[in-house]
Each structure stands twice: as structure tokens, then as C-alpha cells.
Image 1 (cartoon, rainbow, N blue to C red):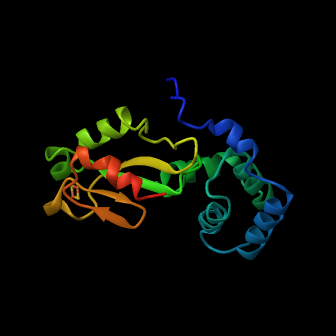
Image 2 (cartoon, helix red, strand yellow; image 1 turned 90 degrees about the vertical axis):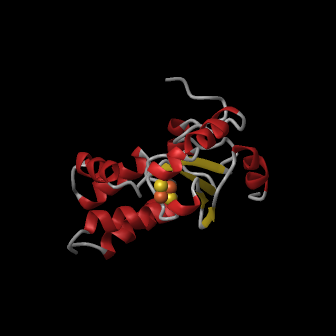
Length: 170
Ligand code: FES
């Protein structure tokens, strides 16, 4: 599948993900969790907090430092949705496609973001301002359709409001 021009290349970004200082910080994180139960998940959480995401180069470093197979780390990062292997934008838009939101027009919100604003589901804008994700119910079904932008919940959203909503996130 071709990526749109607005979507950044994850491969080139991954090459920039880690420098010697970051490598040292990853070593310290690994040492601090050494031998603890659930250490790989803790390390991945902390390193994602440090780097912002978990590209191959970062996982390779963790694998080497922890002396655990790279495949195990890939398994964990792909199993838990809070881990990401691609860089995210400063503002993460989560459009709800749970039943209530879907029936009330959640898909139209996605379509509008895709077509009119050039945001692809699962993608990040080139300027790293926005990432777009879909979620299943964020607990505001009575006010659907809803979308979240970072900590903010926008309720009863109409596609025509999206440009104004997004413009308030600079
Ligand atoms: S279905 Fe969207 S908030 Fe519940």
C-alpha cells in the first residue's frame, strides 16, 4: 500500500531514533529493572517514554542489553496497543468507532480526516503535529460520535467542525 505524501517514512525516522546518549539512557533503564518481574514490559514502557516510540533500532538495543531475543520484544510491542513502533504526532486524534459512535457517524469523521485533511488512519502528518487512530468506545456513548485529542474529548462531533477543532491544536 502506498503511503500518502503527508505520512512520514518510518524507516528513515527509525535511523534517527537513537544516538549514543539515548543508548546510554536505555542501558541505565535496563540495569534498573534487571531481574525484576515483567522487566521487558517495564523497559519498553520507559524507553517509549524516552524516545517516543519503539523502532527496530531501539528494540535491537534493548534486546542486546537485556540479552533476550528480539522476537520476544516484537511480540510484546505488537500485542499491547499502547506500544508503538512508529513516531506519533504531538496531538494524537482517536476517533471512536464503537457501535454507538459508528452508527452516529464515526466513519464519516474518519473519511473527512482522510480525504479533506490528508490524515491517514494509523499515520502521522509530516510535521508531526497529528497522528490518527481509531478506538472502540471511550466511555461517552451518550454523546456520540466522539473523538479524543490527547486528553480532550470532543462530543457530538460533526465532520464540518473538524477543521475548526484541529486548528485549535497548534
Ligand atoms: S461507542 Fe464511542 S464512546 Fe462508546
